[in-house]
Image 1 (spheres, one colour):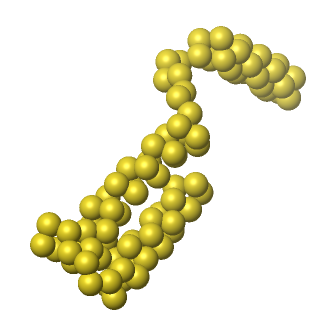
Image 2: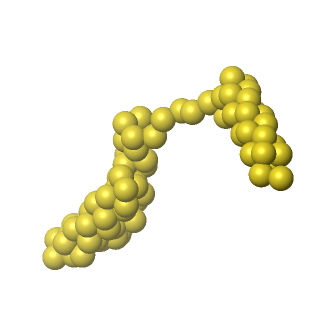
Length: 92
């Protein structure tokens, strides 16, 4: 969700930095200012948005398996199998 919002903000910034600056007759390194803000400016703004997402939204997660959780699941499965066998044996 937050990544989608960042994309919408980036697109709006691109529209303003590129098309919104097109009426300004200023040159930067021989290029119109809208060309610089619409390319390099958007690229820098995108990096700022990514930094914000990685520091505020995304979280570091442990990728190692949780042995305690899997042991609990195995125990529950074992109990379920025993109860199914008991039900099967009682139904005969």
